[in-house]
Length: 131
Image (cartoon, rainbow, N blue to C red; front, side, top):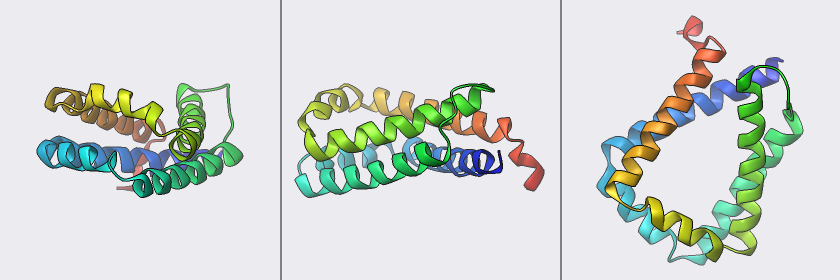
């Protein structure tokens, strides 16, 4: 259980910080995401990173029952693992999906969802008690 709480705290904090960065720098994020898809090396390295994070999460927290935040962490782990494999072996298949969110409104909505999920995870593990 302590591992699950630790993972939730890391993912929750990361999502809040990344989401806020995205929200307050939309133009920069549009530029970054546009450039990302032009470079095979970036896609491959992002795939390796995502694969490793996904494997770490799945191997340390593969829980499909219990509180909803436990299941959310498991889904995030498996999603990272699958995304990593796709980025390494078939990055073109993710480009189309990325283009749907590659607008100011798309990134704004995505950043708000990321922040909300991060706050949810931190609240679920009562992270505030440590602050």
